[in-house]
Length: 92
Image (cartoon, rainbow, N blue to C red; front, side, top):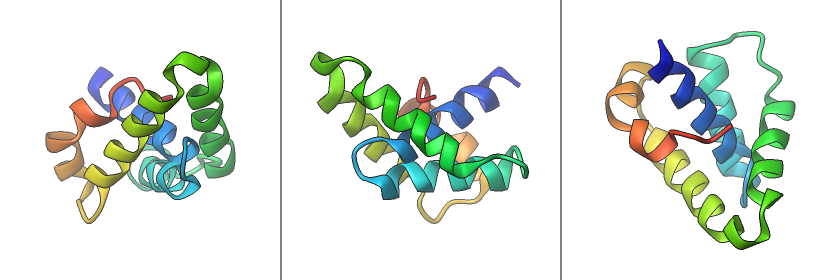
């Protein structure tokens, strides 16, 4: 269960950071696989805020969001759980 929550957090962060498409992709995944009532706009905003939170970490956080989003691309919910935990862990 904690892995699912962590993955969901990672996906949300990706949708909000850097490229809005990355954050949107993460949040869309979270909505589809974990929470049908998720407000994807707020989810993406959280990811964007996380990316911008520490100026010294902005580039690294945006890169993490992009990596997570890329991992999610064209995968089923179960495939993401098996393959994207490392890329998405820690993303709000």
